Amino acid sequence: MFELIRANKRRSVALIVGFMLVVMLVGAAIGVLVGNGVVFTLIAIVISGAIAFTSYWKADKIALRVSRAVPADPQQYQRLHNLVEGLCIAGGLPKPGVYIVDDPAPNAFATGRNPNHAAIAVTTGLLDKLNRVELEGVVAHELSHIRNYDILVSTLAVTMVGAVALVTDLAIRMMWWNGGRVHRRGDHGDSSNPLAYLGFALLVVAPLIAKAMQATISRRRETLADVSACQLTRYPPGLISALEKLKEDTTVTHSASTATAHLWIEQPMSGVGDDGKLSKVHKMFETHPPLDERIALLREL
View 1 (cartoon, rainbow, N blue to C red):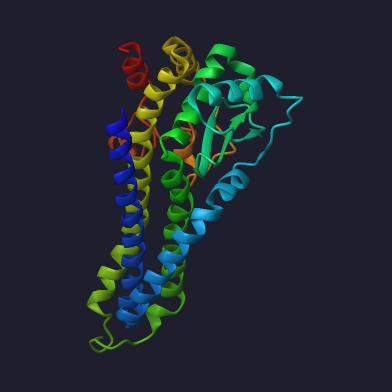
View 2: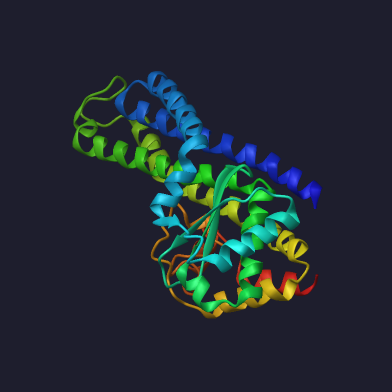
């Protein structure tokens, strides 16, 4: 288990570097389109570093705000606070911030940069539909993300995926309204710069690469968090029963977005896992392993 956690941390660093490289490629693509690749690549390096630095300190607050999470009142949600405190004592963790999301879909997520600066959020639907043992399994799953240091890279991905999508969207709009009408060094007569096609392709592909990396981040961590949760509660049937209820429930988590989808314990978006002609393409961007696989793995413990 500890070796898996160490390997997970190494992959986390590699994935963060990968996100920064994607932003740099976007900058290079914009440079090709406007005729000054070196300058825009350097700008992209600065931007990617600034995004990573800012995200380290603020991404958790952004994730909570985007998800419309509010602090859980200790009196109103006493059962939840008691569960979190008990599991933190058992796992040797400081108690994270506890938040509530007013959403009928049963779901939960953890965010933060380390165990001392972390938070977990659960939906009202989760509290309504799960019994104490099942809720304990879900809370233990989220605390495992915190203990395994999954939350840092997952939280960084919220802002990084959004930043890549925003920058590429702005670049395409600029090219549409202005860049496509301006002659650049290397243009041949009235024809467009051949390198512009490569730049445009990079702008189109970059958000897809970012989404694929986001999916890879989550799939690896969900399985590890499931196993760690069972070690924490010493009662796998609790989490198994919770995942079975999540599987049966088809309510869409309206508080989730494409940028935060990988944070939740279960795929919160509709249509991603549907079967059909594009099912293979959908699976490339699924942020979670199938619940059937997760349940089957837990039954083997």
